[in-house]
Amino acid sequence: MREFHPLVKRWLDGELSADQLGAELAAELAEARALLAAVDRAPVAFDPKLDQRVMAAVRNRPATRWGRAVRWIGEAHELRLRVRPWAVAALAAAATLVLMFAPARQSRAPVAVAQAPESVYVKFVLYAPGAHQVSVAGTFNGWDAHATPLAPAGASGVWAATLSLPAGQHLYSFVVDGRRWVADPTAPGVDDGFGRRNSILAVTARGARVS
Amino acid sequence: MNHAIALLLSVATAGPLLAQGPAADLLQGKLPADAAAQVRAIAAQATARALPATPLVEKALEGAAKGVAPARIVAAVQALADQLGSAAGAIHDAGVAIPDSASVEAGAFALNAGLDVRQIRALAQAAGIAGQRATALRVAGTLAALGVPPKQTVDLVTRSLDSTTDLNTLSGQVQAGMAHGQSAAAAAAAIGHGRPTTANPHRPATPRGGSRKP
Image (cartoon, rainbow over all chains, first blue to last red; front, side, top):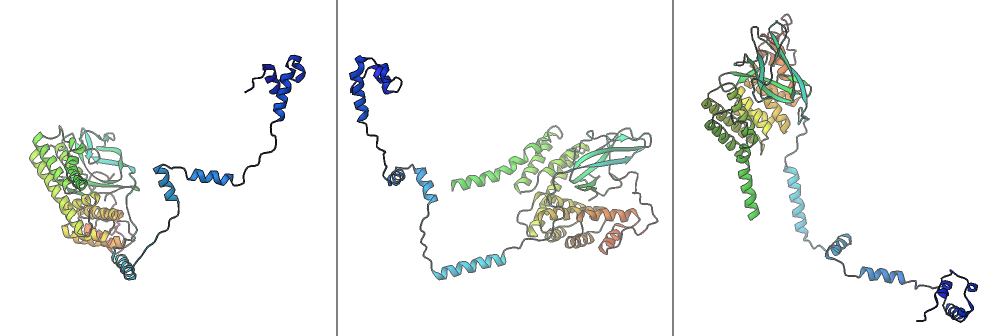
């Protein structure tokens, strides 16, 4: 290939004008001009079907297994099913029987179904004149006789404590002076299995109740 | 096939392991070692039978806190396990394939309060859905604990299930009637007949005994 003078190259690149080239490069400049004139500057027209041919070639390229699977899922496939009419009738009859004899769902509105685990403040009060220490123990504090002390209300003999308890049923008992277990006389009670009674307290989202 | 066997084995062994888990750990230091081991064994057996184990551990803790002799604690835990089993059986007989823990615990509570297995089954059948079943059994137990005769308790709760009555209000109404001088049976009968439970308005509405209900 012809190697032009650097100044001629700059002319070809449009950086210099022909006047800026010396006379000694005139021959080379003429040769470069002839070369430029030989270039076909006619507009290029692409084949209208070129796009389709390119896309067809892309589709036909070897796909990965995963790509083929995805393409298969997305494409429509013809499904042929051959059935016997008596089999279809038997299937329909079986479905009808299942629907007829399946246990119906209860439509009764629930009263206290799956309440959110809300907490409610509950005040425990015991009249225990002469007591030096009173606490309450139950299922809500692991039956810890020391965990939840009641405070005396002056010298009246009334002891009280307010607790935040989760909704649900609780069993409890008062503990007087750390050793005497006393059931709440105002609450219903059940046998504790040890010869004493536990008091019953149920806490609902609307507040404490005795059930 | 091997997977199925492994699954069955894991299900069979998971229960006893759970019964020896965090809940059973609470027994450490609260009971002598041999009594704690017996309680853990009872809890493991209960779990293997799909019964709730937590009430059993709580019962042991309660006995320890009350200073009860270890042998009596173990006996009480075993008695509670038996009640849980009876309650679960009654609920199962009522048509519930797998009784839920809340219903089983409530059924055991009702048994302890004086209802029998047939009455538990009847209430479980009448209640239908799980949440209402547990509530019905718990309320029935409380009514029985208040002194309402078991048969009357079952009738009242069953009728309330069929109406729009809030089950949670029943025992409060009975207590209100008792605070006004009625017997538990009379107060419950008044609810059943739609009458107010304050039959003796001249009695003060203060609770009996020396303390107030929280």
